[in-house]
Image (cartoon, rainbow, N blue to C red; front, side, top):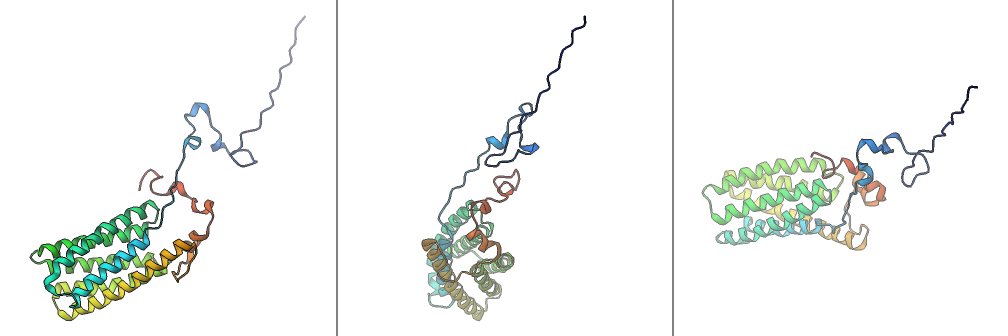
Length: 254
């Protein structure tokens, strides 16, 4: 007599679901024990909110521009150039701090701009304080190159209207200052000083407007955000974290 057996059929269990979702997880979300550790489950990305460093950055631009422009306009005697240079050195420290904080806040435009200003203040302060031979011409060339930097920054900063306006003034200001350093023409120095005072006024306004916005949680004075910059101020948490895995510090390469 031949014994017969019935082979039991196993009914597949429902697949695991993604956290917070009511639908089965996709194939790449199911962890295979033989494929190594589940990196998605193990990975945590921590975000730390910080106070905006931009008011400090703009206030520093305003104060330092007013001091150096006063020297160019003759409001400060030329014999006191070293004192002006030492005053400007503090701008390097403050704007470098702002740049580092802006990088941490994932704002590459603000971080790059403030870092560029920090480097310019440092070079200006050191050359002026030491009275290096040919320093005026060297600073003139640096200012001309900085003009290109400011123009390129302006081309990508348009959604931040108040920053864009600041850069539109910075471009001719540094261009004229560069021509003054290279040629030595006194009237160019006065023109650069006048533009520097205008730059200081706009920077002071921008700093105050941003500070009021941070304190009250809304735009009080005109800042002029548009496009993705405006959306970033009103988007929810999910929108802020969109494509986070592709951002610097998370992806493998810069």
